[in-house]
Image (tube, rainbow, N blue to C red; front, side, top):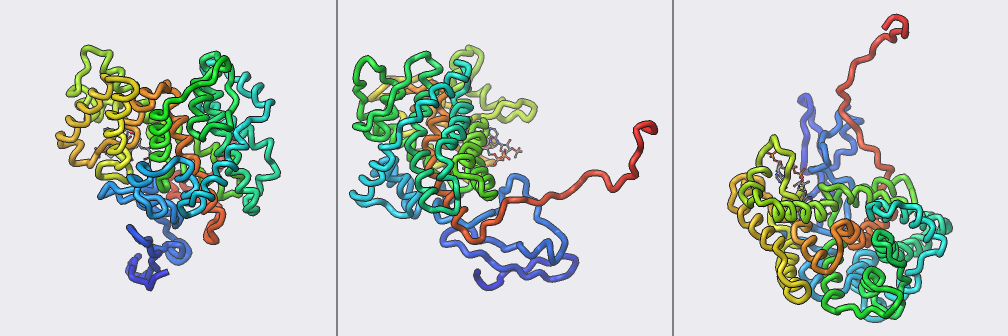
Length: 430
Ligand code: SDX
């Protein structure tokens, strides 16, 4: 803790506050003594100005539009790494050397199979079940096979849980997709790399060995890296909240998946494509009408994929994805009218005072769906892909929380605005 440099006066009384030092970015005011000494709590709906933890995983400079994981810029990681390499960085704290990466890849590779009894689990869902419902349910379901690894205080058990989650999530995601299209489940093929294996399980058939385009493998590695971690966003904060009660890693991650599903968070990538498609299909809809609706407070419509709680500049992930969309479409899928509509919306919004005054820029979800679609994924799988990318970030945050000596069970306070004490009125007198 740094020396006290903050003083909060309440009812004329000084309340010196310690500072929680940062290595980069905002420092924290330590308010842990505030309620005991002054009987007041801080009020911050959505925790927009409140840090519930320190963290060494990810730093976001919202004003400058910068993102780094363990000190490495997202641009360098997306350009030079594989997704498993970045997962190792988040989980272990340093970039792996060749031997470490091989050992990590091998550890994950040998656990990609699901217990055969899980097939009945998938069969229990309706065919049109949303894959995010299956993903979070299946994450809890597989935890029943690994109860010996549930103890958060056992580092070896936590590592085994982390490996099972990293290894089996692509299989669960692919099987959820296969179920929705009535095709046979594809077993993992351990001769393939992590992302190649996922693509083969998604788009392969048991009748022949699928040849997976290396361009698509590279593109999906980049997309998963861009989603790997992002500070204390809604789903990651949920993973920490649930884990703070010493719930196991599987249960905590499943809770994070459910938070991610919301259209204001990870569900936005699916909502962006629906928005672009509706503009494309509606002869009356224009870029201008869409922008007008987004600005109209009486219209619930929002420009999905735009705006961010932290970025008040261009989301660096959106910048990478925008450039990447052109490459991938050119190499894989050809022109997509939705990309042109997206670029038109972005250009119009960036010239509109409403968006400029509120620092609303494209976020990671604005262009990601166009690339996911070009790679062959249906929109209902987009948030599942976001979850596959965010999985190492959730696990790394849960580990950091579990190992932090300052961690206590999460239990925020409130400002009560209900009725003062009342005399009870018996039923007959009401
Ligand atoms: C992700 O936190 C993370 O890091 C998340 C994430 C990650 O990697 O984990 O980055 C991933 O979730 C990205 C965000 C995906 N969601 C969307 O694209 C949905 C559309 N965006 C918004 O709903 C909104 O911008 C949020 C939810 C992203 C941020 O909400 P905030 O910080 O609570 O901001 P706000 O709703 O208070 O908006 C501030 C102002 C409001 O107008 P005024 O009240 O000042 O007049 O900006 C307006 C809002 O109405 N506004 C928008 C808008 N986003 C904000 N107006 C139109 N369209 C939008 N998209």
